Image 1 (cartoon, rainbow, N blue to C red):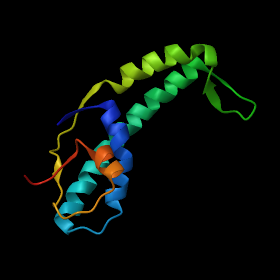
Image 2 (cartoon, one colour; image 1 turned 90 degrees about the vertical axis):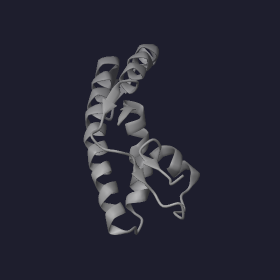
Image 3 (tube, rainbow, N blue to C red; image 1 turned 180 degrees about the vertical axis):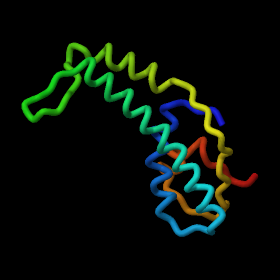
Image 4 (cartoon, rainbow, N blue to C red; image 1 turned 90 degrees about the horizontal axis):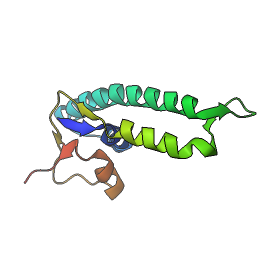
Length: 118
């Protein structure tokens, strides 16, 4: 499955909600494998984003690094490049039962990692 880095970041929230549901064991296993793979990729993406924050930022009085306002456009441009990167996962989308009840935001966040029967 090929997805963007942004798809991965967005999916971490939606999959978190799915992981909290009581589901049949086979489906739970597939979702757990998917969440593990996405989590590993998300970690790399967050690490790269943090490098950009350091590159374009400065530490505030609390010791937190924040992007300087004058660097915001350059940071956003580099972040857009980062988030548009293609990532290949050696997993297929997980088919969810048609009867599952999800919030629309969860479904949007989990797409394209989940499908429903036709």
